[in-house]
Length: 87
Image (cartoon, rainbow, N blue to C red; front, side):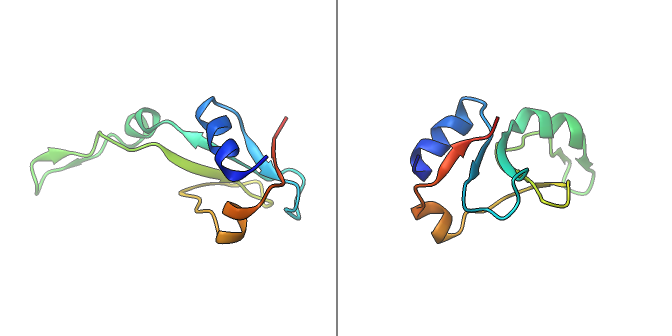
């Protein structure tokens, strides 16, 4: 599938990966901003407001078995047609 189809799958709660990636256990997924808000629970006393509203974000489960929030697609990723749903 192409990148647009991969984005649609992510929005449906699926995990996706590229066949061309060098690690077979690496995938990306969508992190719900509400879950981030619950995890952060941070208040900035200097500004008098809380940082409870978080946007949804893409995250990657890396080849090092670490979750990194804030994954960005490269141009190669965006133009690729080798996206698959990660099972």
